[in-house]
View 1 (cartoon, rainbow, N blue to C red):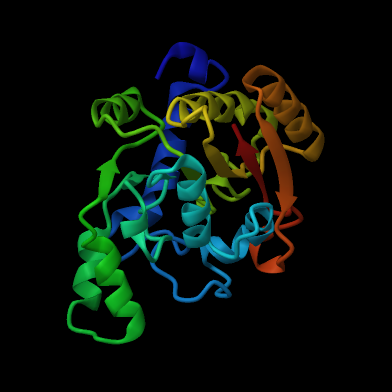
View 2 (tube, one colour):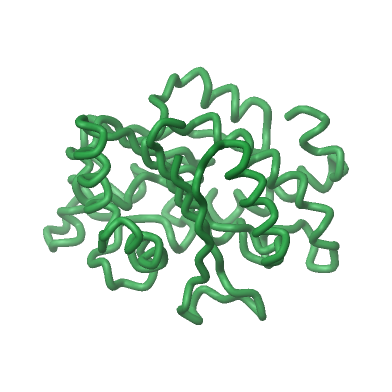
Length: 260
């Protein structure tokens, strides 16, 4: 990662942050609690449920619905990226041209092994998603130069829909190395990550759904989004998740929907 990306952090703190993000995900059979296949758009851990307010902007109840809407608008199947996630949130990946998950550890084998001998509805759906021929997983640590180089080398089609919904790494317990740190010291890191994320998106009709790290307050978020829209000629909307389940401490989970 370039020095400008981390000049607000010492190398040791960045290393500690990387370890903190990857540790819950590194053990076999265990992953971040909000990643995986969840049945039903009403289930509280699903992408569809958390971001339902943003989906309503497009007249949709699920991201599968949104893929259809974008496909009709683009007159082709859209390309979808799940940044910092395993690309499990679409129940019908066949409606995409490409469906790519970018996460620090590939968990497909763990999920597939767990569900291999089970034939209930959720397990069948899990195996269907994992086996989709147009779906791929890229293992990359986005807190390293190598991680972003690996993403670039993968030559992923520009995303018509990019969803970044890591939950854990962005909440107050994991967004900083230490709970006693000042959150403002981490703002530059997340700005750098957002700039890199923008390079993955189709700027002619693409859509981003991304959670906002808890190191930001509402005033900072609104200023950032205003500057973004002026520069990119985009339209951004800020949402607060209404469910208390998503709120860590006194911080309410937020996400933004940006249309190009």
